Length: 122
Image 1: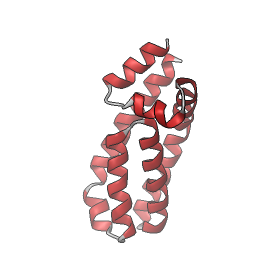
Image 2: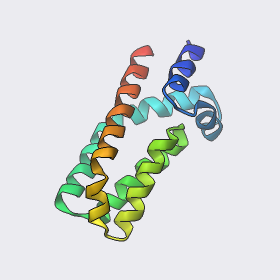
Image 3: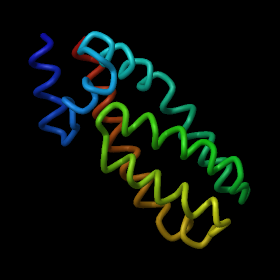
């Protein structure tokens, strides 16, 4: 089962080896990935609310956390997108956030689909 889970993630562009390296072993990686799957919708809802209200301070905090979680778990391109939003929010650049928000939401939806399909494999 472990190999089929790894293969599924790799096929979806996830750097599983980096994730395992960051979390020590596959068992820990798997546990953290499942936890991330559970918290992801709430975190997305939070950053969406902060964006809608123009609260760049709290937007920065949540996208920073999501960036770190994504990078730790091997979702490198997603982590980079969150990083760009983090940098923009630090500069209070709501224009960048707004202009690139749909790209981020599309990526978030892609990642959530991967996570839910992964969770169904457990």
